[in-house]
Length: 386
Image (cartoon, rainbow, N blue to C red; front, top):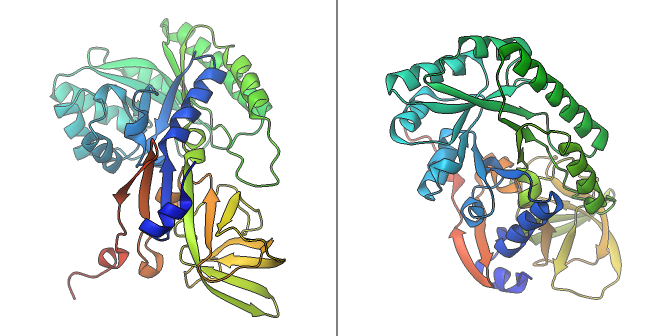
């Protein structure tokens, strides 16, 4: 259990808290439900503060930018666990990686990237392992035709083709959709193997397991994962790795924000908190009408009222949640929003209004550690030359 009162007293708000025990137990739960048959990949973009804590529990890290590589590199995470992905592979960054490090794998998302990796591997006379990302019908990955073009033109002395990467989105709540995608990958893999007379070793599947953020959601995760495992078991001849960053990270995070003002007009009661949509992101939220899991401190037994919870940004869009019925609120009350371990700290519009970035606290074995203090975004938004 997180001692939220301790966090509030020592670190104030707004603050993110990441519970490492919850994080590790979550990884173990997923592994157990999938019978430890499938390697788990953590997407660093989901949360850059927790990768080191799960290094011994997952197989790989998906890294989608030079900045993410800098982070995991400084964390001394093994290069043998890094998959360099992303639609924009900066040439200088990739050259640095190929020249100076032995990275586990690179993905190919375009003909341009194929040529880049080919040229650099030859330049430094290094063999590199690659996955070709197959598009699901968006800007990511390559078409079936380009996939075949790459295989026809690949120099096997330098680029070692290991398999297919495929990702079609997050929050997949439909078992039927997952099954259709797996059936498609099985068929496509078989066709490629037959046409090119090769054995494809691996399918990395971005399964997009759902996180149920809202109080009205009904979800039997045990049953859902049992069905997922049965579908994945249809893949008989390839190693399967699963990229599931959101589902790994969400439950370990809490976001704390304090009430700083309360007002009432003919449209309702409005509460202003010291955070906002620049810090808090829930996937699938619709105009703040869905109610996420939360609690309020201090705990009090008071009559209830209905409130709109708004952030500190000067925009009418800065609603965290609308029309929630809860006990009467006062200034300095603290909202604790749950399941914020994935994307909230990395996806919010953090620079808007030049408000400070929140602190980040890690809880591990009942110890609390400040791993980031407030960062003044006013310094980032300041024009250095006038």
